[in-house]
Image (cartoon, rainbow, N blue to C red; front, side, top):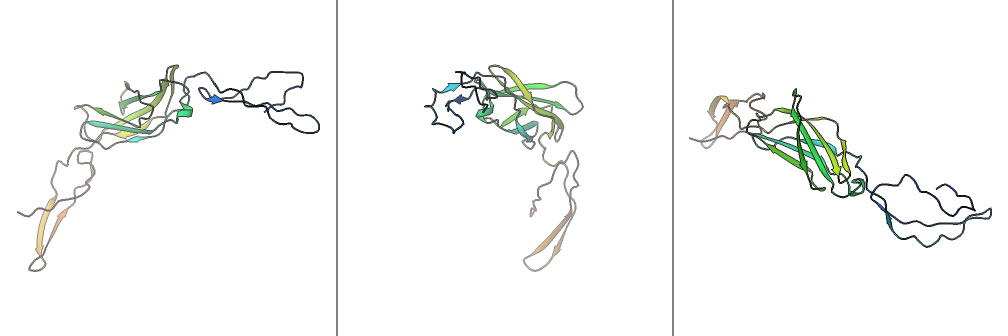
Length: 194
């Protein structure tokens, strides 16, 4: 901290964080050295301010058909800058000009799920997550691209064939389903005996 002239009996402390409790001590110094510190002052909380730190690690995806799942890293309490902290979720289909806005009122929240039957599977959305508190709306994150939930595969694997390997085993093979926007990611296959 800056040294204050010996004839001065008060100082302004700057660059403190909003809505944080502080206590202060004063020490006297001269050419010989520094003396003992004073007793701590009473705790003093700085005034609230609009939050300036946006959530990080904006991602999501997955979920069920007709869902857009958005996740983020919650903002720590010391950076919330006041009471009434929450999140502002903004999203739009890629290429659209109109944003949809939602509010999540829990400071601990890290997820928002938007459900709408008109969402087609694996649709890309532009997403931003911002913050607010009782003082006003704060910073928004940069835009992330997140895909809506997938649907179950709409086509069956082709070319299924079976080859007898032994008296108790049969080897079944098929052509895999190629990834496309409508089939999504195939995570596995199920072989059924008829």
